[in-house]
Image (cartoon, rainbow, N blue to C red):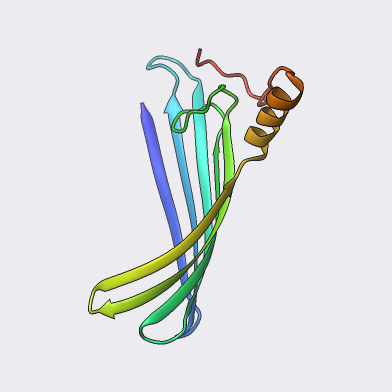
Length: 135
């Protein structure tokens, strides 16, 4: 059984500035009769600035943690923990037509360390530090 929740807080400071904070979390029961549960979570912080009625911009930070790879899988299976930043510029062209230019950058220290250890030195992959019941 899987359960998922999303919590969102939006704060509009004034006509130009607004902020959003969001938290996503999920839990999965390992088997129907067991008492073991696996957890994944994600966080988001967003700052928006309205230049005028047609132009808006935003900056966003995201974090996602799925150490047992319930939702996001990696190869090799070392757990998925990643962060990202993005920035966008929006133009409201006609009524409900929105044009967006967006730049994103995602990074994962655990994935980078794994690639560095394997590709550079041929060393075994580092453990994610979690017991993984998934084969």
